[in-house]
Image 1: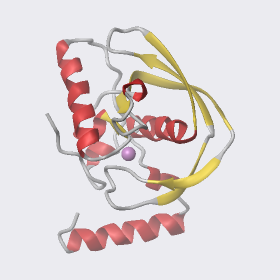
Image 2: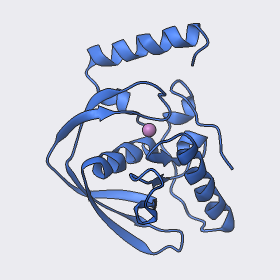
Image 3: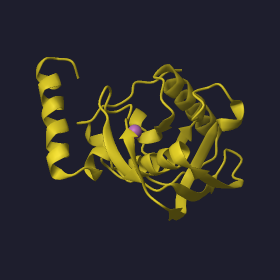
Length: 169
Ligand code: NI
């Protein structure tokens, strides 16, 4: 089932999420919904708080659904190590239509659990590394906008306020 994605301004996007403790069928359904919602919105990553679920998990597929091997679900993720830095344009399904250059590590080593509670280690670079950092930020209640310079952040926030006023947000 495709769920509604919360947009910037919703307080549920800026609260830290709680660890997943129950590996139930409900969790499986949640992950299915997250993939469906992410593909429907043409995103490459989606974190549970973006659909209002206050739990530490995210889904990601940098192939946009073209390669099943790229499908990742990471539960209670932790970033163990990072390397390098890349400044690239970044977007977020909770900030539709807006993009900004954000500095992220080039390489990320992360760990978490899959739906069967098996430990997974992910070593990723480039877009996937950016995505992992972006999604873990969501779980900590952070949006990429908070990583911009005050000037750029202000510019984006002004754009959003205008869109809210005109009913486009
Ligand atoms: Ni996002």
